[in-house]
Amino acid sequence: MGDKMTINEIYSDGMAVSSSEEPSHTYSERARRNLWLHMSRMGSYSETNEVPVMVRGEGVHVFDANGKKYFDGISGLYTNMLGHGRPEFAEAAANSVKEMTFFPVWTYAHPKAIELAEKLASLAPGDLNRVFFTTGGGEANESAWKLARQYHRLRGDTNRYKVISRDVAYHGTTLGALTITSLESYRKPFEPLVPGAVKVPAVNFYRATEHADDFEAYGLWSAQQIEEAILREGAETIAAVFLEPVQNAGGCFAPPQSYFKEVRRICDKYGVLLVTDEVICAFGRIGTWFGGQKYDYVPDIITCAKGITAGYAPMGAMIVSDRIAEIFQHDDTSFIHGFTWAGHPLSAAMALTSIGIIERENVLGNVQANEEYFRESLSALKDIPIVGDVRGAGYFWGVELVKDQETKETWQGEEAERLLRGFISPEMFRRGLICRSDDRGDPVVQLAPPLISTRADIDWMVGTLREVFTGATKLL
Image (cartoon, rainbow, N blue to C red; front, side, top):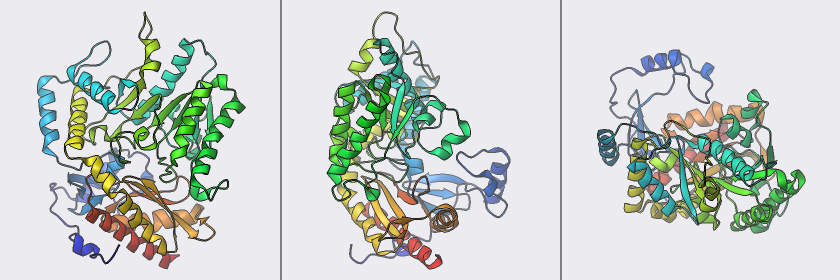
């Protein structure tokens, strides 16, 4: 990598004037009193530990109520693909509201939903030409499982209701999507869940016990675990397999090229639908519009959200192959499912604007050009004793932390809590880097910056991680 400027030389000390005149502690008090934060330990916030309040964004940065600047290293939960404050979105939103505030896509259609459906069909691989809109990713996955079950039922396969997904995977929090999710701490409070969840191993080559010296052979073995699960459960009971192109939970598990081709073959052999959950990966996160274009496969259904609007409005979608959709196009048959706000005109306008910017500015090309640089920069951190593995694709990377590099011994329980929540997360935040410390599996720090990020941005993020990880080794 060569000599680099220090962090403070690349960026300022992180201070800027806030657009809000309200003191941060007042915001925090109000948030504690009335705002229920998602996936958060509400009891951890107090007068001395304030709720972080972000008041504005500019490009790849956000600013809190104290005026401090942060690099948005997780893209607002993998969503702010194009940065904050783009005037094109404001103009498109204003025009949309002037034309029509809202009309549902229940029975009716409107021009923006039609235009966006056409555009998504043109970008998706193969014959995925039918678009069913939702308002988010969990809803898209819920929709896909329901569609798979009704599809099989309409064809006379009334016993096909089960769904196969991978260990540690996250697919949403509605009861159906939570059933597909494999994180026990998320599932346990809500059991019993929907019947039919079947789990197979995640594609975690770092901790492989089979074919640990051959990535492609490991990919084939991993795919064959799906076939074994189908045979074990009975092929006549399996409706669908749900897989992310690069698995988020557990820390950016990227498969070898052999994996999805073999999964596609297996699903075809047993009449099982292949659903790829691309809520995070679609729209350039891994350098292509969709995962099938990176890993050379065509699924039956794609679920997507997050980056579809670059975070400028809520929206999700289920993109379905003509073959699956065909059975719903006759007589009085309907997919008995829907969401009021799905396909909202304003959200559709935001999605079209986002896709247009990605095309005009060659944003996918930026990700592709910097992918290996990102990988190499993060891999250089392995000279720090607690850095075990670096994995991912595009602008979606995980750094797994270990107690011992040689044995790969992991951090568990109170030790992991002390490492991630006790030091690494607050120290990164103090230094102005927002990313994700994830303990849903072995401890991992994830980076998923806006897709417009430059090599200088990568250098700053990696440099910050180096300082924080080095500091962590001195405390352990």
